[in-house]
Amino acid sequence: MATQHSRSAARIMMAPAVFLLLVWMLVPLCMTLWFSLLDYRPMRGTFDCCEGFANYVRFATSSAFQDAILTTLIMVGGILLITVIGGIFLALLLDQPIWGQGVVRILVIAPFFVMPTVAALVWKNMFMNPVNGLLAHLWEFFGAAPVSWLTEAPLFSIIVIVAWMWLPFATLILLTAIQSLDSEQLEAAEMDGAGPLSRFGYIILPHMARAITVVILIQTIFLLSIFAEIFVTTGGGFGTRTLTYLVYQRVIESQNVGLGSAGGILAVILANFIAIFLMRIVGKNLDK
Amino acid sequence: MARAMPTQRRVAYTALAWIIALLIFFPILWTILTSFKTEAVAIADPPVFLNFEWTLENYRIVQERSDYMRYLWNSIAIALGSTALGLIIAVPAAWSMAFVPGKRTKDILLWMLSTKMLPAVGVLYPIRLILIELGLLDTKFALIFILTLINLPIIVWMLYTYFREIPGEILEAARMDGAGLRAEILYVLTPMAIPGIASTVLLNIILAWNEAFWTLTLTTVNAAPLTAFIASYSSPEGLFYAKLSAASTMAIAPILIMGWFSQKQLVRGLTFGAVK
Image 1: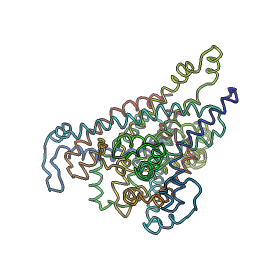
Image 2: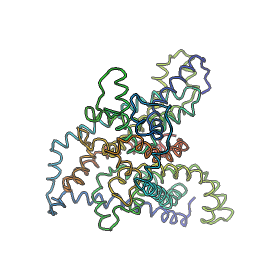
Image 3: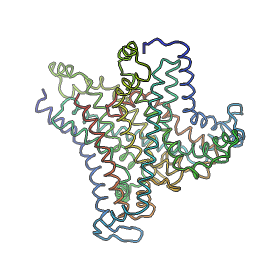
Image 4: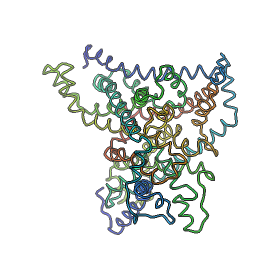
């Protein structure tokens, strides 16, 4: 169908986007790769070639790295657990013929649009502050001692803050998936005597399976690079240092670029594992 | 949902949904309310909900105190600039992929998506170094360019999924009538593509406005947008709840409103067409 003429035109039209993304991806990544092989500490003026894999070994065997991996896993896992289970529940609820559905949807979706630094600071100061925070007042009201959330349970606190921001995302996507379900199927099952639980387990959940996978993968990719929420709440202290934050500290704060770059490459490899799965699903969908 | 439901159950579901929705929305509502209180009322024990004297004082102070306008202008410039630049690059690319697909179109699309999954922190230092060398660190230009590149895969993808829904027969009809490539784009495609482009623009502005990795790590003073402005309230200013709330409300209000309009596009844009 396409003529030779339109084909070459198409190539030219695609060129800028492809070229820019290629440069954007390759140049800095190659630089990071190069730095990761050096003893590169700008503050001390060292730029010594060819440490080999020494930086990788040092980074991967440091206790900071192991802690960071564990923190990252707990943080991402915790947020996923809350948002996916909460999202399924909320999507089911919002799918019911409730009054004021439009407004309820708007209220539920709102946190997703809140700037990360705003969300983190509002929660940190106005809710989790042990003296004037709203949660402290609530605890006092019930006669309990106020909790200093961000020092006593910092990881949990950050999980709550980020989960609050991402719950709307999971809900919205899962709701979209539920709504594409043919309601005749459900009616047929109901007539055949299937109870609500088996309707959920055998019809709704399998129908949502792909959407749930997509939610998990996309969120994982975004959550692996959580930064602002940690930056303004704990600054990486109190056991909230994720891999992303550890690399940031090595590279920017302690200016050990060689070591940090090795960590950065490790983070890239880690993210790629997850990305591959996501790409498969998206790719399959493209063929339809 | 056409299924009949007993009124009793409907009332119960409605009540439950509203309670949960209000709980989820509460932090935002509380921030907005607090922004109209005086500092003393904001930390009152027990907390005051609605019955206080409303004041606009905080908004005035935040404006005066901290060049709020400059941060706001930076945010607007960066969000709009990167969206415009992104569109200029992405529209031709998405158009050609949707209407003149080649053997490798799918691979190119997936590859573009994969660049989005690169952890930013992995390339932070080189990017900083390049910007310092070019004298572009802490400039709006650099941020506009970087946010364009970050969101380019999403823009291309969204436009692609919209363009693909435009029936090819219309194009062929236009071609038969003798329309050239230019006329085809200008008079046939553009009018049909405008809704898709509009939602892409909306989503991209939201993403760029809220981006908080590059904006925090690549700016200090001159190009700092609202994300950085709010981060500067970390402490001790953050303990002035009323002012923190006023600053926060101003930072999120425009996007909140835009976001509500773009709920549906959000699903398409952020799942790359995998969920519709």
